[in-house]
Amino acid sequence: MAEAFKFELVSPERLLVSEQVESVVIPGAEGEMTVMAHHAPVMTTIKPGVVTVKTAAGGEERYVVFGGFADIVPAGCTLLAESAVAVKDVDRADLARRIQEAKEDATDAKDDEARSKAEQFLSQLTTLEGAILPA
Image (cartoon, rainbow, N blue to C red; front, side):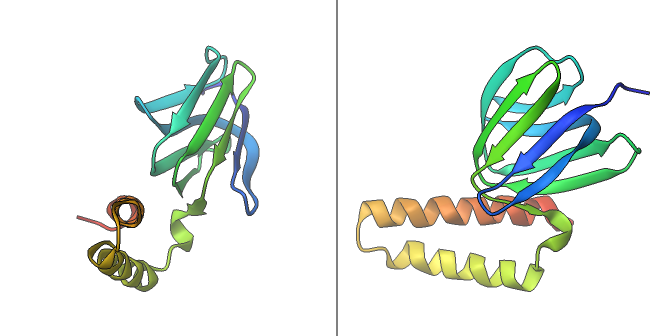
């Protein structure tokens, strides 16, 4: 059994996780990384993706994050997400509607900045869809 460490997942809206865990898989900017107790100190940016948390009790929880950064030290890990939601709390119909609206926003954008922002949001939504819906 792996040694537990403190993990916190924080979004601007609320604290989603603050507990002892065995491991956390985070979507780092350089690729996915697994964090365990006594990990070497690292600070990394987070790209949109899924955070998988293996709790000390043996359960597994999944959260979708849209950017942010993680501060990893030997005693624990804190992930500050730009936006985060538990996979189980995602409304699939609402997600499909948001994807369609984002496609329309990208098509109807008046300038490059607006188009780029709409395309980035669309990319984040499709990342979320791929993470939670079966292929």
